[in-house]
Length: 92
Image (tube, rainbow, N blue to C red; front, side, top):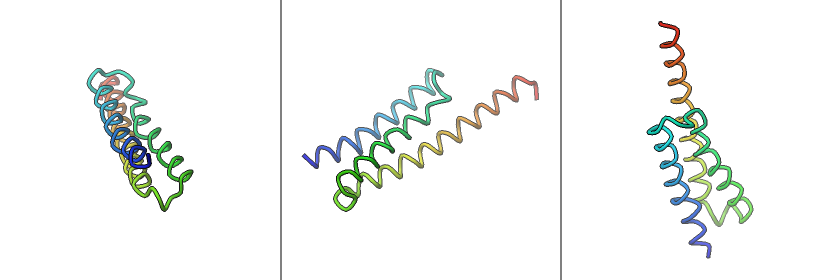
């Protein structure tokens, strides 16, 4: 049971997050909130890890940190794209 929980909470959520961000950039829909695709699983992984016990599920904590880093990177890229779009609209 614990092995299945670790697999679902790590690799499945990571793949789903990557797919969601890829879809949002590909279709140009919901780009401004695409960073949530990594932030929400990170919160879920941390809550699950600390509920079960941090010493038993270190992989959830590691993947939670990885998802937080990706959320920050996607958020920064979204902010940068919005700044470029605003600059382009103003004619600079």
